[in-house]
Amino acid sequence: MNWPESVRWQRLCQSIHASGDALAWYERLSSAHASPGRRYHNQRHIGECLAEFDAARSLAKQPEAVELALWFHDAIYDSTAADNEERSAELAKECLVSAGRADLAQTVAALVMATKLHNATVGSDAALVVDVDLSILGQDERRFADYEAGIRAEYAWVAEKVFKAKRAEILQGFLKRQRIYSTEHFWKKYEVQARRNLEKAIRGLK
Image (cartoon, rainbow, N blue to C red; front, side):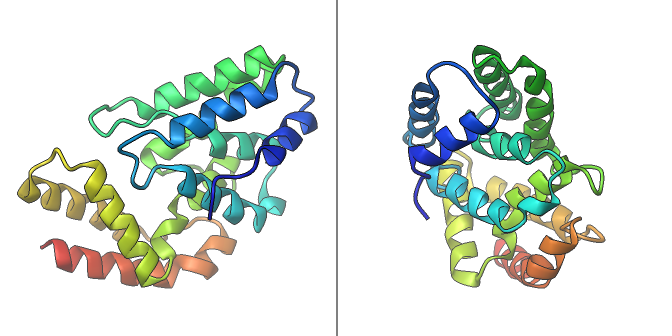
């Protein structure tokens, strides 16, 4: 799945009656997601998220806000930093304010922030954003293995022993949840495979 074409972004901007240079923001986002070192949090990831959202769009209360959040949720990504989501949320707000849609800015920023802890109120648009972002966990074994390899590459600066321990802890956290996916759509589609993938990955890390 490649980075979405500019026509999609322009259509989204038109749907919210945004003003200003939509293509400039598209290029900014495109460049950010193509920056060196991004082995998973890249253009492919955003394309996959948007494709997942397209199949679940009817679940959104504010579909335009959800889509904007997906475009921006990894706009800032530095594996050595702890404030990527905060900075991505601020960038989304900057975009919307400059486009004359300051009224949407806080909503979209809150949706971006939901991806920090991957935990949101069931039935909310934030829960939908989280499920979309976590859809990677339920992909086939080959894609999941690519994802894990990408994450490892992004954290190449972390010693192997430390990485394995921390990564196993993170994946175990998802596995311990009563449900990984809060929406019925994603639960039915990915819950079983996600648990298989996580169990296998944790065994490999230990």
